[in-house]
Every structure is written in structure tokens, then in C-alpha cells.
Length: 179
Image (cartoon, helix red, strand yellow):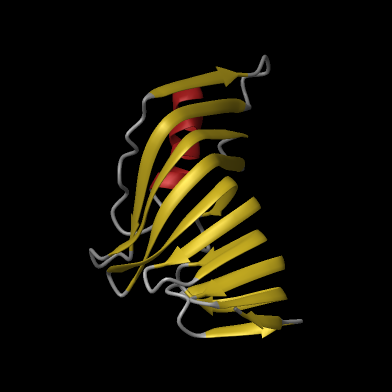
């Protein structure tokens, strides 16, 4: 039972799309509760990858710690100190850095909180309290306060929505400063 639940919890993160990619796990532990139903799992120092089911990368991520608890029917997972390369059309589009991340593998979403940064390969960067990346929709949503920097322009906003490469964006409650 313990191994089955641990496998299910790891699959939440690793087996999100296409062929599941094995996690490169440095240390792992699992604890089964006294009733034999709930398992707590901790992984330290792991890498994960998602693809789009057609062999194109969607995300490569590294994180310091993954913790999860749950039963065979339902699990909750959280990653800490994650750095992820996010891909758009098979090419790296941006890098997300976050202290705390939860993953919704069913919807292929990452919800990052705690002072999140996302930097585009084009040079644009976003800092926000929380960022949600929806890989299937190729969409990044940030909630405030949000600070967007592009060259010599800084935009402060309450909200922000863009594609993964941060090329096409919408703002709510925005104010721009040109230096």
C-alpha cells in the first residue's frame, strides 16, 4: 500500500503528460499513518520534465524539495525552491523561479507563490506575489502587486496576463514608468 500511494503521489508531478519522465531523486522518504491509509512523501533535490505528448518539451524543472500527502484517491503536493524552464512551441520561452509551487497535473498548471519571478528569453521580466502558468493555454497570469520590466520601462500593475514568452500581454490597474 505504502509503495502504491508513494508511486501515485510522484506520478501526480512526474507523469503529467505524454510519456511520464522519471524524477531524478536524490533522497526520498515515505511515512504511512497508523491506520495504513495516508502516506506522506518527501523528495529532496529532484528534476522533472513535461512534454506535450508529441515529444516536444513543455517544462524542465528543478526543485529543492517536494512534499506530498494523501491516499490512493486524493493527494496534495507542494514543491519548494523551484526553477523551471518553460517552453513555447518546443523552444525555451522563459524561466520561472519560485519559493513555493503547487502543481495541478490534471489541468497542467503550476501555481507559484511567495515572491515569484518569471524571465523571458526576450529580456522581459515579471515579479509578483503569485503566478499561475497554464501550459495547455500557453498562458501566464500574475496577481499583485505585479512589476513588469522591459528595457527601460517598468510597469506596476494589480494583474498581468501574457503568453509564456511574455510577448503579448494585458494589464489591469497598470501604471508605467520610463527611465
